[in-house]
Length: 295
Ligand code: R5P
Image 1 (cartoon, rainbow, N blue to C red):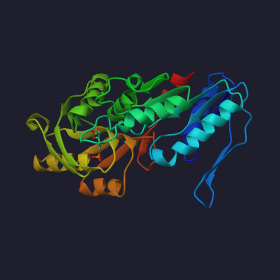
Image 2: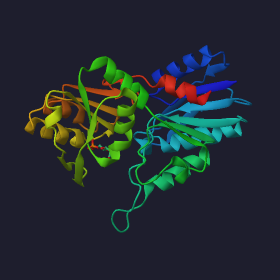
Image 3: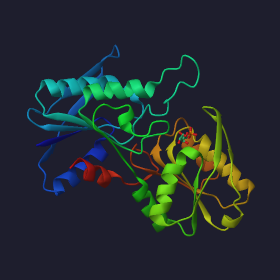
Image 4: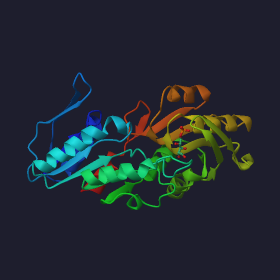
């Protein structure tokens, strides 16, 4: 028996995954989890589902990881105490992947420590397009089986079905891995721009010659949209070279502060994301990708 448990905020995705999982003929139920804070800020967790001798799968994206980590630790410890067979975590977005180096003296490489924390409490992890830059694979830092799935196929299908004459644009060398895969799957042309980041919100972009793509519909692709600065600088650059307003596609809709609105104000024709983090821009469903990989 497999028990799917949604961390608060992940109910919709959990239901989708659960329904598709059941349609494969596998036995599963939905667990009921309650999490709230006591008046003093401490975390209260209650699981209203018997987990003994079951496989437990927790659906919990790790955006805002600091607000979830304590509850995750409590849940994982509790279900193990209750005699579950294994507890896995499906984290469609995996946080703490970008601090993969000490850029300045004294900076903590939080990606490694966070990976150690999750590895200590869970038996396996499945995620989508983690920000692998200086690490080659998740197993560089995760000691449990950790699978990185790719939304490239779903994004390629969306672009082919929704955009005529597209040119795919990656904002920086890190995006090359995602953009080239989507281009390979869709047969569409792509270019990679050059990005310099001076601070969290200060980014500059330069590009190779775009002359031959002047009449194409630009589609900017990135794994994460957080402050939106990366995409906004690409939009500004496209305006300077007189290209059409672009469609911006991100796998993970982090959108800190007003970045979604700012992106639209800056001239994005549309902003589209995958449903790894619940957001109004979610248009590409990745639940089937997850189900195929947890069966
Ligand atoms: C970093 O290199 C990532 O691939 C994204 O480009 C970055 O996280 C986007 O962040 P922001 O929206 O804050 O510019």
